[in-house]
Amino acid sequence: MTPGLRNLISDVPGLKVGNAHCEKTRSGVTVLIPDQQAVASVAIMGGAPGTRDVALLEPEQTVNAIDALVLAGGSAYGLDAGSGAQVRLAELGKGFAVGSAIIPITPTAILFDLLNGGDKSWGRNPVYRDMGIDAVDNAGIDFEIGTAGAGFGATTADLKGGLGSASLQLPRGGTVGSLIAVNALGRTTIGDTPYFWAAPSEYKEEFGGRGWPSKMPGMDKTVQTKYSLGTIDLSPNTNTTIGIVATDLILAKSEAKRVATAAHDGFARALWPAHTPMDGDLLFVLSTGKRAMNDPLVELLELGAYAAQTVSRAIARGVYCASERDGDTVPTWKKAHGS
Image 1: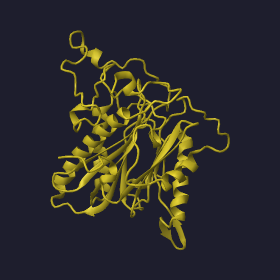
Image 2: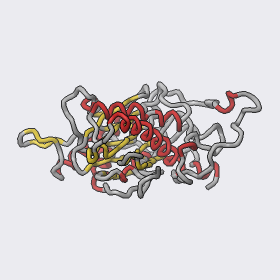
Image 3: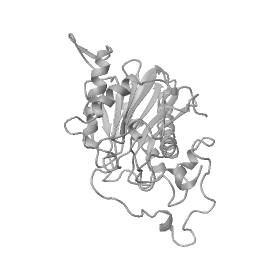
Image 4: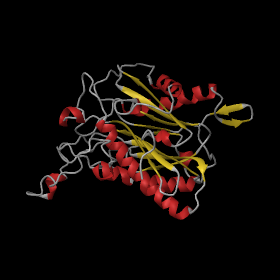
């Protein structure tokens, strides 16, 4: 099995991704837009999520399709990005029709990047609504990862975070892809080494090709060295890794919810620790509904497993591709460990 042509979530046919960022603020927004309304659900595993219009994604709720999914920095201020995306999509004629009214459905999740050195003195006019509009206008099949979009100001425990994406052609047909804004309390690498926890899932050299070390750090001392948490900022709401998994397989909302739950395994394989009380770890799952499953039970199982794999790869790619900016509070992976 191999990634799609771009190794991006947009390898799933019918999807576009748009990024926008503000250099001064050191934050950004990413919007995923399906060509047509799409089924979606969500699974939240972190203890400190920030969301807008997420309850409607539960299987028992009435609304059965969305017009876009929005990922943003800015903590609670970033929820305005969903409003910006919504008004721009309405101008483009996209949305849920209620009589003569059109209401685009734009569920949104945010991460905390308010302490990353950027200027957050925006007064009464936070920049996120405008960035939501710009991200919609920037949407396309090709998009930047690393220091881009919702990952523009992201950090991890010891390295810059970023926006990552990956895709995979499924064994029985169809495609799965992921798009992750990595802003974790934990680490993506093993201790202070350059080796990514996600290495077993890596395709070729998409995040450096180093694999795992031949001998895990600390094995000649104690196992705890390898798993040391180091110094952790335990301030509330200072983290969160958020993302989207997408597929062209036809899914009901309940099936999308099941895939979202399974795909969270990718967080646990790529981040140490993951799903903490201080992270708002969240995954949306979206189905464009273009391809029927011939063996639904088996293919749903496979989809969850391979979705988790693309999530792990996207997390590592987001950190690996991060670029330096003046005033960074933590180094990039490439500055810390070389290319």
